[in-house]
Image 1 (cartoon, rainbow, N blue to C red):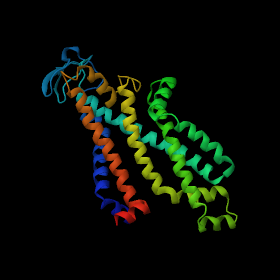
Image 2 (cartoon, rainbow, N blue to C red):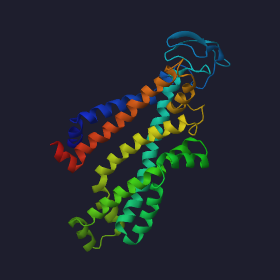
Image 3 (cartoon, rainbow, N blue to C red):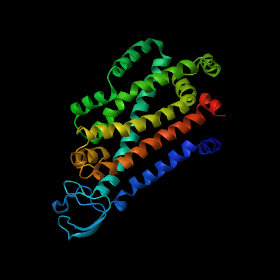
Length: 291
């Protein structure tokens, strides 16, 4: 409770957590906030302006009176509904990409830092992965695995693993010299118990901060992949593919690109602010500077 109170006093944390709470509410309430199915096409409503009242034709149903809050795209789809549903995809990608990369990175980092014989092997593999630019590695993985939600998540997660491994390894190398770890070793405590009860919990603060930065990077990478046509297929609305489809007519209909961008930018900013606030409070080095 005291830790949360300290976090809440941090302005960056407050802005980040409140903005993310709003975005999560939008994602959960997408079926109620999105006025029509984001995948439904109505070729009579192509490139309609913002705020126009129309009768939206849905196959098998009577036309529905509808307001185009953000206009329609070149295929007659409601941009507002597509942007709202795109929030779900972006947050899911951020959550699962951070979870996968953190899980793999923590495990490999613990093994590398605690077992010296495996250290050089693991770190050379991580160096090899870091030799590739993250976005190029993600593009190659998506091209090899196919454009589906889980493949995009994996493709975004793998380039982030080496950074977590390096962080966790450095923390383990420091913590293994602490008196409480040496005492546990002297008492013949099993190695798994030392790792998961004494070392990993004491590395929690910097790891959770790193996880927020990975989540922000995942949102941006997914948008880049979709914008390049290498992400999720167009029938799954994401902010990236909405902008990709709208860039062809940007000069005539700039809203097709700007509206999803207005959601993308605050999402990345909120996650980064959340991470900065948690770092300032939880990381002893930064908390001393702030105080």
